[in-house]
Image (cartoon, rainbow, N blue to C red; front, side, top):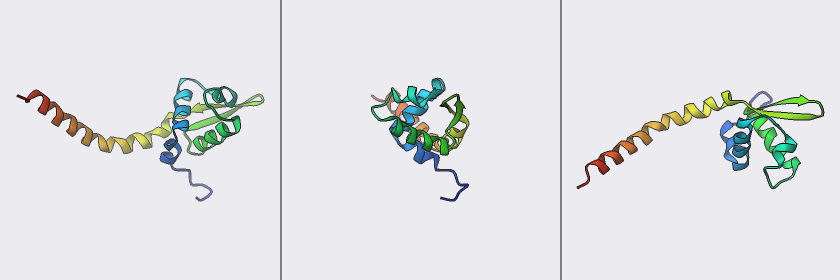
Amino acid sequence: MGAKEKPDIFQAIADPTRRKMLTLLAECEMPVTRLSQHFPMSRTAVSKHLRILSDAELVSVEKSGREKRYKLQPDSLIELKEWLSFFEQFWENKMAMLKHYVENED
């Protein structure tokens, strides 16, 4: 990966721990110490996950005294939303077929 190339957002959210971190950070910004309380792992491991999310620009980091506070950057999820929106046509089609089947079942 080149120096200016950001990590793949899909790889960043592939891990369930990182997805849970994003959900927690959607509620409010938090320091590593507080985030660590939600996971059965070391603060170092939590920091590594946060670094991946930060590199993918899914979270921002702000220094506040001696601690770093992490905050969700929801605009970065637009890429994911746009990719998934393509597939909505297939879900909608399947749901329409199911509705038709249920309503016309005799």
